Length: 254
Image 1 (cartoon, one colour):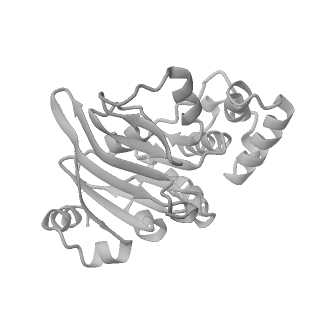
Image 2: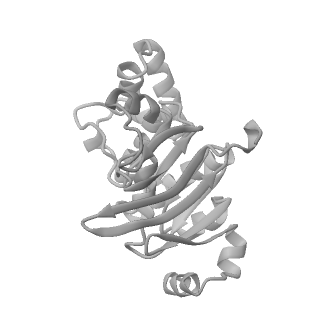
């Protein structure tokens, strides 16, 4: 395998038990550099658990996750990764949550430059310059000195995206990033994500926004009962789904 064909994310035989229930069941998934992969499926299908396992926010019962060829998460029988080493490996994974998780006492700019200074050891002046550039990139240059309470939900989520990008990740993970937003704010967040897709940022996205999935994704992954049941390009999946469960799910959202 050449460097260009090595997956940036590789999920191998991943199983996860939560509350006595198997929520991931022998999941295998490779994501190549520059791909946008969207995970869809009914509630409880395992989409968010799969996403969180990539960043080791959920612990696998068995299997392994590699990012950039380096193990991030593995089942109980694998070699344990120390807390410090795990934190180092996680730096290359950006995660955007449903509910922003910004520090309320910090300005937008401070929220963006805080981690690069504390975690990466960037000089504060350099980190601040980068933060301002990232806020401009997500359309919030004029909100640098605003606190989260002064921002709309859509603006807070765009700050959260800038914060994740500030760590210069190899891959960005998005867990239903628009689900907590009012309808009129959804578009501004999706447009930032579309721009990242155009720039070939590697992204794995859990979303119910099917128009975004069709427009921006390279691949659509359909999950059901903890398994991947279909994996196809958007036009093929939406226009000619093969799995009966996929057909049923798409009929409910259309």
